[in-house]
Image (tube, rainbow, N blue to C red; front, side, top):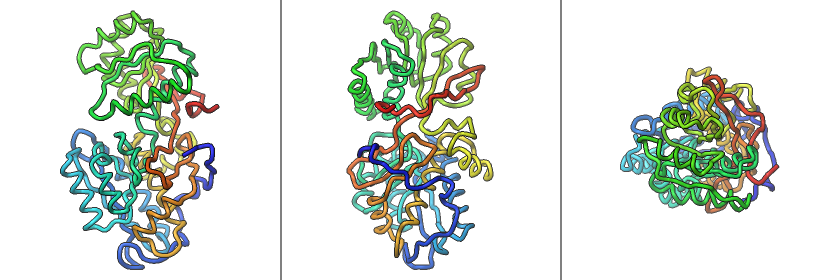
Length: 386
């Protein structure tokens, strides 16, 4: 789907605030709640407890303003603890037992790959706050509100070669199971846009001693390194190797205050972000997010940004439905919706009728200065676009 055809149809200030013109029943009766589900990692290895909290806070705001034509939104989040069996059970419970009209704000690391077929078979849409694996972006009934790790990777490569003007761009990555194909696709997209190739590609990086990788990078003359593993040891050893003139660019998972604090002075450490950098609450879109999470004492993270955005765009599309709000009418509305310009991201968001959905592209970049992240001035970097 071509982003150049997108048209801005709304402003974030109007999102999710007032009662709407929607009417009819959904989930059983015209005056009952509109049931919305999510699968989140609240416990387990991939924990995002702030995500369902932020989604609920947006829906509470809508309900306090009168709901959707007087009907309240009932939000039901299931914790899958990154357990495959629990994730499939959660999807079945939400769809069959709870009779939700859609899934909004999911943040599970395993949900998309396990449940994509279930969502298609059930005719239900999912709008994850955080899309993680490739299945989140290659399924007909799933459309995340983040670029995802692979579109972000393309943006990081593009930033290294086109903004920082480096000829020798290298990659030292840890590859998670099932993500190798997505990484290769991202690299190809960058190469097709720029005509450039990686000087070094090493996807065997682990959590052990980083010295052999850094020696390899130094010998190859790497000017920029894309890196996604443990931050502290890597930068400590890079400084020991005298690599202060190398730009090291990390993914959104490394954009935390804790990581900024362990990077030695004098190192060039960057991170790509999927939304407006959350450490600057004055950036477009961040004011609303900060109001929601701050007012409800929710942890301020990039993932909570995705939660607020997912809930906001869901409400905006819900407001366009004429007649009954049911699973069928909600799915139809998302398949036929107009794009929504949301200032927290680089391109408009749209679900649409395609078999794959990765509408959000681009990244903003931050750099560590004095043990804290500084937002860089370029704005969103969308590969291939000025």
